[in-house]
Length: 138
Image (cartoon, rainbow, N blue to C red):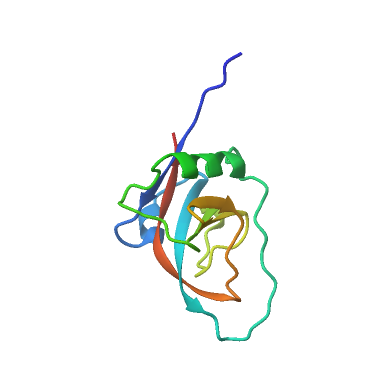
């Protein structure tokens, strides 16, 4: 029996991500690409929210393979060491305003010329949003 192969695409939002996805009625996925802008000097400790093992049909191993073999972003992007990509499931029926993506999510980071599953510690580095948008599952 053959399985339909799927791929993903990271579509960027020209303006505000919340505004661009406001009309969506069913569950969808958003992504945020962060870039390290320096070391954190806050001295804060805290608990990290560990990534999920999968988000519905999105498996981290599948996304990792796609990230390392294809151009998935809809803009010119050259990854830099310590870039961080987070993918989160959004349920519009439970919409609430948050600055950070919390809850069920997947994390990836770029290092030594390739993407890896995991995250960059916000307690060690200052991260700044580079781009964000909606994930399309094709």
